[in-house]
Image 1: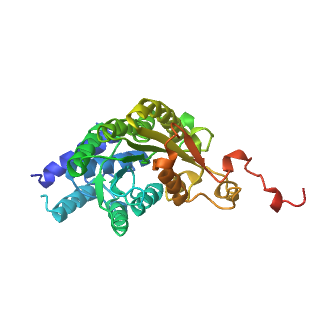
Image 2: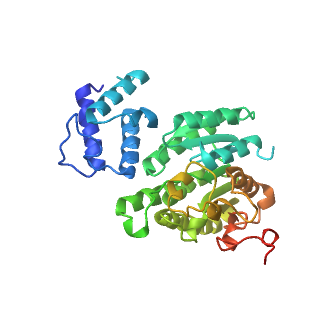
Image 3: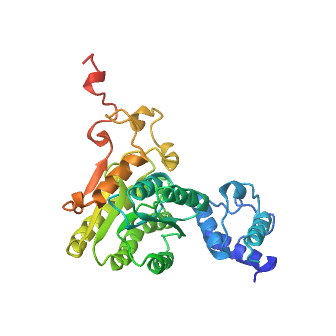
Length: 85
Length: 261
């Protein structure tokens, strides 16, 4: 079972690993642009998040996500929808 | 119904060329397994379309750039179907960059999905084809022509074509045929990724001497033929489906439309 803190830690590990910025600042207001995530980074992040959390991420919905805080909230919501809290 | 009761796996089978192949094989009686990476809704829609043809359709989510995921996918196929008759290595990905801009991770991502996965899928598929089968690798003209921003994808397709020849010879004694299909620009969503590097004069790449662009169904028709008994003596070949596009310079105008000359 993953609570929101565990989700945040897992998201941070995935995002920083794939963007190759292990020491970058990761706060709820950090955006993908600040992490200089390119299109390949984004695809790899989405694939990793889907696999890790067993969810389906909609391109339309993820385009609305502006920062890491919203990303963590979005993943939590998707897990609730799927019934895997 | 030449493929009645056969089982076919189409990687990247939910959209574009893969979708057309899935529907074509289903129309000819094959039960289809649709692999997809992220677009579940598209996979489900394609599966439903296949079921309307009276066959079984099953979807499997797997990033085939990951060997572990390939293993899990084939474990599921083995458990559910027990065998495989047709494998279409169609899934492709890539990064639209010039050769000098390609970095190691872009190279790995593209090669892993477009070339290595075909090898790993084939190795598993062969074990499910004790009575023979057909394997088709989907390539493109970028394997032999230099297309803007297509560098690493073109290189991966060249590897895939070489793999096709090696596998064709190794697997011929097992009754498994291996061939490839390479096309010019095909009218799909994926084309948008690379079209920004192509000439603004769309006629130069959106038309062929036939007078129209290649459609996904054109590829699917050839895949179907290559999987049929009629193609039994075609081995290790890459069939070009381009309406003659690769035989002419880009500005070539067929004589009939060029009366001034």
